[in-house]
Amino acid sequence: MSPLSELYEEIALCQQCEIAKYRTKIVPGEGAEDADIMFIGEAPGWHEDQQGRPFVGPAGQYLDQLLASINLKREQVYIANVIKCRPQGNRDPLPTEIRNCRKWLERQIELIRPKMIVTLGRYSMAMFFPGKSISKIHGTAQKQDNAIYYAMYHPAAALHQQSLRQTIETDMHKIPSLLAQAESMTEAEQQPQQLNMFEV
Image 1 (cartoon, rainbow, N blue to C red):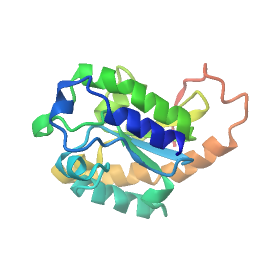
Image 2: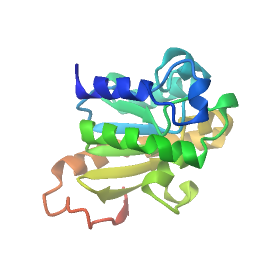
Image 3: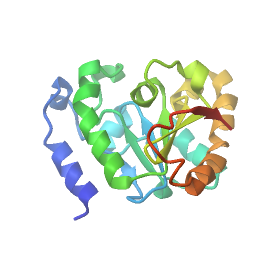
Image 4: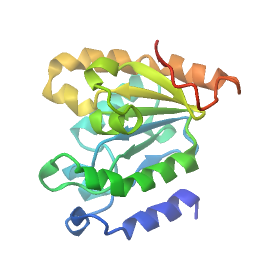
C-alpha cells in the first residue's frame, strides 16, 4: 500500500467535523502520486460525495477541458480539495472545517512533493496567499518552499459567470511556462525566504 493510500484510510476514519455524519463518501483526492502539478479546490459537491472523487461534476468536466488545452490529462496531475467531506447543501466550508482538514492537505503535499501548486478558488487561495483577493492575484505566482504557488479562479466560476471563462483559460495557459521555471529553479532560488510575487 502506498503512503497516500494509507493516508486515505486515515482520512476515512476522521469524525472531527459535524459534516462527517452526513457524507456519503470521503473525497481525499486522486491522480499521480508523483505529480509535478497539484490542483487544490474548495470542497466536494454532490457528484463528488456520491463517487468519492474530486471534480467529477460540471466544474470537473470543465477542468478536464482546461487540462486538455495544455496537453495534460487528470491522471498526470493530482487533484484535491481544502476539505474532504461535502458541506450540506453545498454551502461554503466553515473556518473550523478548513482548520480540521488542513493537516490532511499538508500531508498530501508532503507525500506528493509537487513542483507547482495551483489554487482553485478563494478558499484554497487563502491558505497560501493569506489576506489577498482572488480578483487581484489570479494569474500570479509565488515561489516558496521548493514549489511555485499559482492562484486561479475556481472552474465553477466560469459556469456561473461566463465573462470569467476567458480569464480562467488565459490563466491556465500560463501553467506550462511556470512549470518550466519551477523545474529549472536553482537551489539558491528555492530558499523559503523567497516569497516574491511575479506574473508570467
